[in-house]
Image (tube, rainbow, N blue to C red; front, top):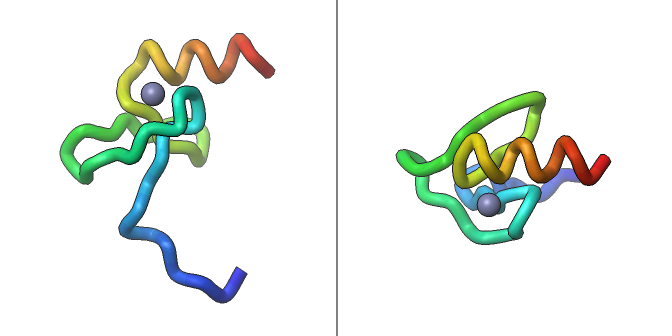
Length: 44
Ligand SMILES: [Zn+2]
């Protein structure tokens, strides 16, 4: 928990690494886009 990995974000749906500009932030998680977010939500 003490590690700093804030610069490196991975999509919670497809686990692809995200660039700052690319990501879609929602519900405390990072995603490529809205589609991946939806996929993640449906998986739950
Ligand atoms: Zn994704």
